[in-house]
Amino acid sequence: MTYHPPAGPPFELDAPENNPFLIDRGTEIAAYLRQLQQRHGLITVYIGDGSQFFVSSLLAVDLDQGLFFFFFPGQADKMPSPKDTLTCSTLLDHITLQFRSQAPRIEHSTTGTRIACALPPQLLRLQRREVVRLELPSEPTVHCRLAGQRDDGTLESVGAIELAPGDC
Image (cartoon, rainbow, N blue to C red):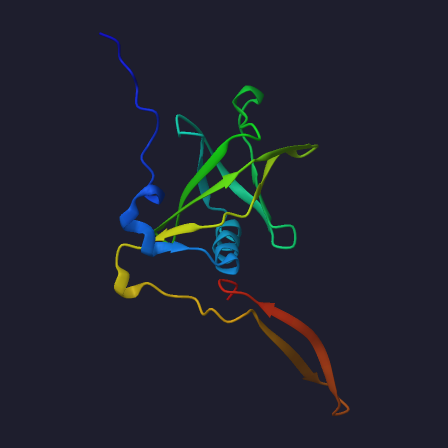
């Protein structure tokens, strides 16, 4: 008798009953990824069917380019190829986040190896108690202009601040 190990873990992202918890607004997805980056949260990154994985953390989220970057701590022979799908799983405030990205791009620098991926089209935010689930407003990003008063009584514009969901 031959032992066949399971291909990989089942992902909550694939369960049809979790479809109501899928987020597909880019600004909201980016906000959660930024929070994860700011808190230095660990992400388990599964390659392909999940039989290979590594643990990493987000380095940056670039909305202008539509990319996010994370550190690759592994060996060269374990690197994902551009044909692979990456499934990322993590916790943020004790809430499961899972998302997928296609066509990872490996980038080498003097500080190490990082992986660049397109921002995911969907993100699963699975909070077990739906009654306390917060919906972020669908309005565009809030822009504020702050002013300060000088000693001579004139107003001085301090600058514009962009507030996106999750930045507060």
